Length: 180
Image (cartoon, rainbow, N blue to C red; front, side, top):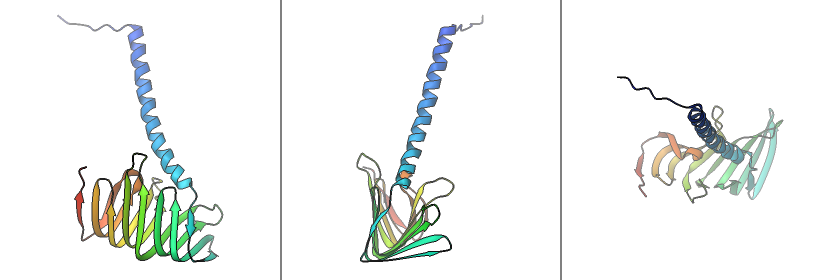
């Protein structure tokens, strides 16, 4: 004996409605994360230093900062001895920030729940990844980073703040996973 499950047009319509709500909710969460990253990238970059030298070469505006350097963008803060900020001259878009120091210090709030990452190294390069639009922070030379779930020391560390992810390192490395 076979059993057939009969569905009424109303229950089918309700199922489709819930599926549509679920699909829209997932896409809204994805869009919200993307918009948060884009909002950070669109935030202005503030800087201060004891000396500033500005030049334009081949369509790139260079801001050379010396002594007591501080670069901020939203909650992101980088402190060092010298820095070079590179902007595309026609669009005024930030291309890259390179900071050197003894050491360079980096900190950033990751979310509204108080998650914070901090690190230090001999140099830090910050740029936007072309294919994903993610902010990339590269710590090079005696690199140390501490995020909510990881503490790591390496020769070099690549860090993606939006994902709280370390996709690449150069060793030797020593680290721990924080289980708080």
